[in-house]
Image (tube, rainbow, N blue to C red; front, side):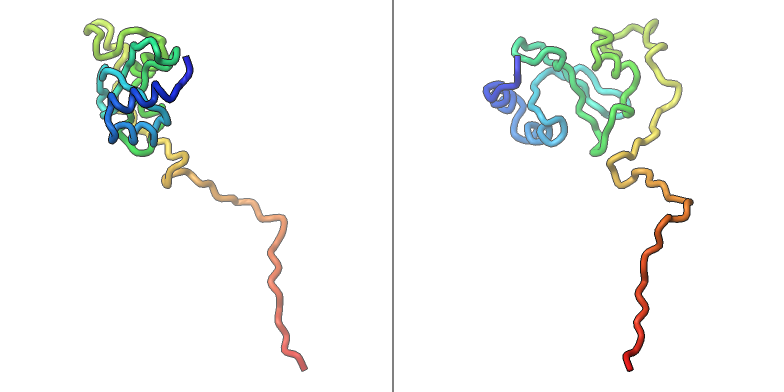
Length: 139
């Protein structure tokens, strides 16, 4: 099923105006669902099991940070979002969580598209020099 105006209005009514604006500014769509879990970085994971939702778009994440990318997710949650597993990492028993955990917090920030983006500088001499005019006094 495609994204329709009726679905958008219904989801906006369910989630409220503030959350509607936050979703439109981040994911560009309105989604209403149940909170499945929160990872240790503060990202919130949701799921919607309504039949009117678009196929394979029933799980989503609301990032805590203003600038976000998929590298800010833990591997277990990333697999759940991509439909690799059906059980979220917070619902697994202790025997299976050792595979999902990361030994230390992975906070290598990807600054692409942010003010922290890496900008290389060139060490190669330019092929063209800019022209600087010389002004002589007229006689």
